[in-house]
Length: 70
Picture 1: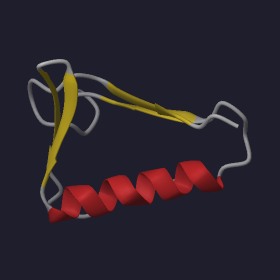
Picture 2 (picture 1 turned 90 degrees about the vertical axis):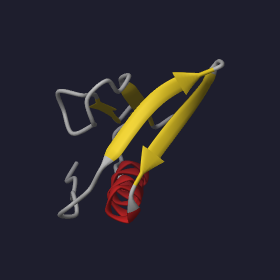
Picture 3 (picture 1 turned 180 degrees about the vertical axis):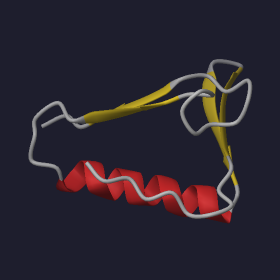
């Protein structure tokens, strides 16, 4: 899967009162949209991606795992 991060992106994922909150600027939202589109286009069952504070998310973010369910 090819992920395209748009320059200047910012994405933070937190859990607040049991809900997942994604806080992102415009570039971050467009980047996530690109990732979801790539995941939807991938033919591999169980295709997925992981994001965390060590892999593209802002500091103190919780891990985000998105899985394609066929």
